[in-house]
Image 1 (spheres, rainbow, N blue to C red):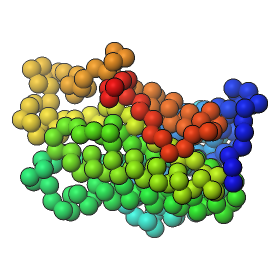
Image 2: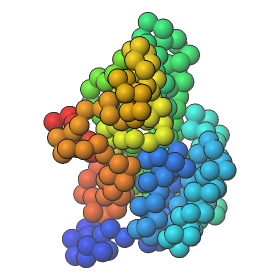
Image 3: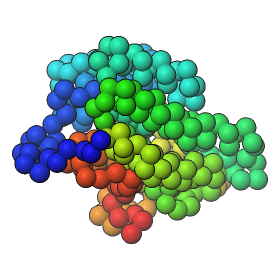
Length: 279
């Protein structure tokens, strides 16, 4: 099923997601919430899946109130296939289908390589890699059944392009896996009219990233604030070519591009949203 030619659409039509149904995993805070907000602003109805069900519900209520869309929050554990299936089924039941699925949920524990256990490795891959696979598969099954195609967006990382800080072997490995998975899913799902794109952010100061960086500094034997105990962890990150550290919305706008018809002739690519960090 070929994707439609949208060459004659206006810019407003290309960016609009009115009438589309989106799922964002790990969408209650941080990058996921920023992405959900932009999708809702573009007109999509949004389901937030998150381990923190209460926060997911509150975030969904914020989307509905701010942008006038339908929005729901549900508990989701992406490491559990049953949980992912339940969320996909609930989305179809309550919103009528799935047009966009954003695999954003992820973990990034910091463990020095010589101390990394098999169980810790498996946990990271269960969430970051298998979670993305299961989310994409369940979304694609429902998109295919509906015969309408759709878009899957995988949040990768610059860690999917290179090594990064010490203690993150499992995280880097999992994100390389998701980047490769994005290419393979694009190949397999194109006949169903389903596009698959990755978005690879550099470090942005979210709650989770701040905690990850603090753990990395501790592993290096450095206090959180370094020479200045008041210095926020973000100050330890290299400034990208564009002169500032990114914000969650910098990444969300790229995800919106990937989910919308602005990128209608793209699939299989992973878009770097890193301020030139990996240039």
